[in-house]
Structures are given as C-alpha cells and as structure tokens.
Length: 363
Figure 1 (cartoon, rainbow, N blue to C red):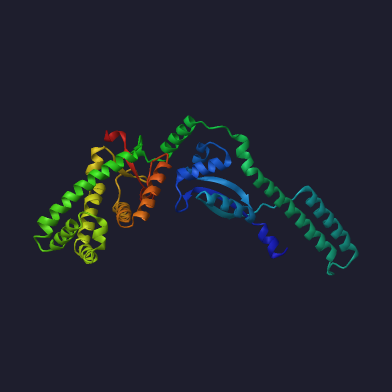
Figure 2 (cartoon, helix red, strand yellow; figure 1 turned 45 degrees about the vertical axis):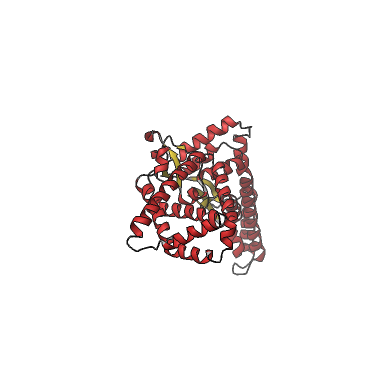
C-alpha cells in the first residue's frame, strides 16, 4: 500500500479537557457552542468536568481538521492522540480476500511457487482498498451524525427571557469558585460613583503630599505649578488661549518631567495597595463592593493588580490627552460590560481576570 494510503488509515482520539484558547472565556464558549448545536448550555457546561469529555473515539485526519476548526472558532482547545486502528473489513472485502486466497492456492499448485503472481497481488490490493473505502465511508457517516445527534436529542425550542436568565444564573453558579458563592456583580453606576469618590480623595492626598513633603524635601519645584496657574488665569480659563500661548509647551513638558512620575507613583500606591490588601478602595467600601479574582475567588495577586491598575490608568490618560481615542475606549469597555450578562466585566477586568461586586459575607 502506498504511503498516502497508510497515512489515511491513521485514527485519532479527540478529547476536550477544559483548556481554553487565549482570549476566550468558559461562559462565552459554552453559550456559543450550545447555540451552534441547538442544545441547552448545561449540556455543554458538563464538558468542563475535571476528566473532560471524549468527542470522537476514532477520527481521521480530515475529520480532525474540521473538528479543530469548529471548536477553535469557539475558543475550545482539543486534545488529539493517535490510536491504533482496528483492522475491520466489510463482508464484501472479506469475501474478496477469501476468493483471492482460493485463487492463490489453486495457482500455486499449477505454477512454480517462486514465480511472481501479479494478478493475486493486484486482487489483494483491490480488496484492501475496498475495505479502506468502506471504513472511511463509515467514519464520514459518523461525522455527519455528530451534530445531528445533539439536535435529535435536544430539538431547538424558543427560549424566553426568563429561561435565559435562569440558564445564565445556573452557568454562573457552575463556573464561579466556591468563595464567590452568591456573588452579585456591581452595577456600572456604582463603580463609576466609587471611582469619582476615590479620585477626589486621591487629588486631595496628592496635593497634601506634593506641597508638604515633596516640595519641603526639594524633590519637586512648585514654581512651575505657579507659572501654570498664572497662565491659566491670564487666559481667563480658556483652553484655546492656553494652547495658543508659546509658554504652554515648555511648562507642560517641565510638569510631566518633574511632577508626572510622582503622580503616577502615588496613583499606583493609592489604588493598588488598597485593592491588594483590602480588595477595595475607599470609594468601593462606601458602596460595599470589592474586587475578586475570578480564578480563585479571593483577593488579587500583585500581578493582577498591576495589570488592572496600569490598564485603567492608561485609559484615563487617553481620555484626557486624546479625547477621541479615549471616548472610543470608554464606550467600548462600557458596552463590553453591558454585554457580559454573568459578571458585568469591563475590558480591563477581562484581561486581569477580575470581577467587581459583592458576596453575602460582605453584607
């Protein structure tokens, strides 16, 4: 048999063990695969069991390409292991082999056994080819019935809003860590109000540290601030007049070089330290909400805190320095949170693996 024929006879076991591709989440994958198969999301959620699930016991390379393409599209990473193919032949192929054997035995009596028998070799090869074609046809039928099985067992039905909410609630319970049992995501209104309060406290704290500590120790020169304030007063509070002034560029550069690093450092300390050790800033505490790790259900690690704080700070800078870009980013993260029915996560929550809300023990 040729190398191509041998290659096509290889079989593979296809399993899903719960491993996701980067950029996808369990809940989004469950909902999308369930929609594709027209089955309840609970059926797909069972695939995330510790032992995983076997999708195909014996698949050809062509079928693997199709399966990987489908599941990778929904964020599921497959585990593919080569298995030894079982030698099976259809009744027609077995009959052909027996006929070939009988013809071979008769021929050997009449002719010299050492002489090449081209007809027998060709018959054997035809019989093996027929058996291989029958096996591949069976595998193709199995592949076609793979999706049909799900549809037959779970025919599509209209889902009401109440059914969808119940399904999402069950998914949230299945996917949340034990420490987040009863978790209720915080509304965007609460989160925004908490940040306004935090920023107000931070600005007051920064001004006190700037004037009473950094300036007294000679770490910053407040004269540049005084010049900036004087320029602001001269322009009558008009941003257009300030930007038209020839002094504004030099003053802005000097402020960024001397005061900017201290601003960034204190910003990180204010938000990161509170969220790392207490799970919440002063503003969040007022609204009784906290930040949790979606993976462990506990307070965040320094890595998660750093990622989350840096991304949020960069977004704020875009909003103030590049308003057009900042507005698009702000709108994008708000829409993302609205479209996340389980946890109301923003874009930076998704990257950092965090959720913001409350659990019964906090109340």
